[in-house]
Image 1: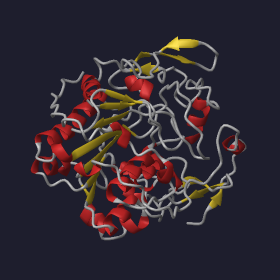
Image 2: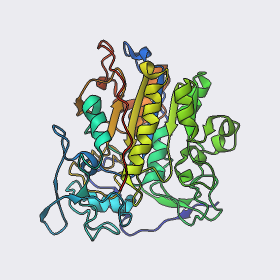
Image 3: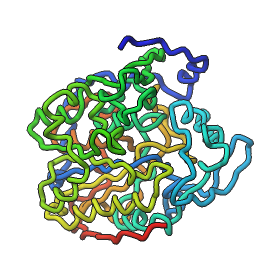
Length: 413
C-alpha cells in the first residue's frame, strides 16, 4: 500500500526540548554484551505481557515503592485516586496523542484530557485487596518501580518493542480494521501512523519487515515460542509477530507461534522453550475486562511453572504493555522521539530474584531483549536494547534459591 502523508497541525509537539530526537530503530553493530556471572543458571525466560495499567494504578499503594495515591488534574487541583472497579465502565484513551496530552511535557497533569477521561476514571487505582496475588508476588520477589513503556502510546507499537526493540516507527494502533488483527492479517484498508527520524508521519499498512530477537534466537539455535490467541480469537491483535512479514509468512509462524492455552501444559510437562512470550484475550486485564479474572489467569500460568520441573531454572517477567490512560506521577525519560512512555508495573519472579526487592533501576521493554542478548551472547538489534539496563541487577545468583509461591485463584466479583 502506498504511504500517505499524515498532516497534523500539532505534530511539532513531538520535537520538543523535553524529548530527545534520535532514531531508535537504527541498526546497531555493537558486539554482544559481556556475560553476567551466574546468569547461566537461568535456562528458561518467560515474558508475560498483560494490558493497560500504569504503575500507580496497580502499585501506587505498595509499601516502599515510589507510588502515589493522589494526582494532579488539568485544572491545577490535586485529587485523591479513587477505587478502580474490577470491571471498568469503559476503556480510557491511551493512544499516541492521548499519552502526550496526559504527560504534558512531564507535568503529568492532564490525564483528565485524554479521550474518555473527563469522568476522572483514569484517576483511580487498585488496592491490595483488589489484586492480592500480585501484591504477594511483589513482596516475595522483585517489584520494579522504574519500568517504563517503550513508546508514548498504546499496545501495537509497544508490543513490537518486546520483540524488536523498535516499532518500525509505528506510533499507534492500526485503524480501519475489522478482523481483530493488527499486523499482516489486517484488512487491506488498515493503516497505522508511522513517523520517520525527521518527525514526518505517514499512514502505512501495519505489516513490517525488520529483524527481531526471535531471528537472533533462531540463528543461534536457541528454542523459543510465542504463545497467543489465534486468528479470529480475542487477543489475536496482541500476537505481535503477526506484524512482522517474514515471520508471519514464513515457516516459523506454524512451528513457533502457538495457542496460549498450550503454555500451562508445556510448563507442567517441562517442555517450555528457552524463551517464551505469552499474551491472552479476555484475561489480559484490558479495560473494561475483569482485573480479578486476569489475575487468576496469570496465577494459573505462574503456578504451572512453579509446579513443573523447570522452576529452579526459570525467570518470569510479568509486565503490562502501556499505561492504559491511568494516572502515573513519574515523568517518563525522553530518550528519543518515541519515548519512553509512562510507567507500567513489572514483577520479576524467579528462584534467583532478590527477595522483596523494590528495584529503582530504569527499565523498558528493550531491557527484556538486552537480558536475552546478555544471557545467550546475542548482538543488539537497535540502540534501544544496546543501551537498556538488562535487569540482571534484580537477581542474586549466590543466594539460596527462593522456593515456589503457589497461589490460589480468587472468586471474582
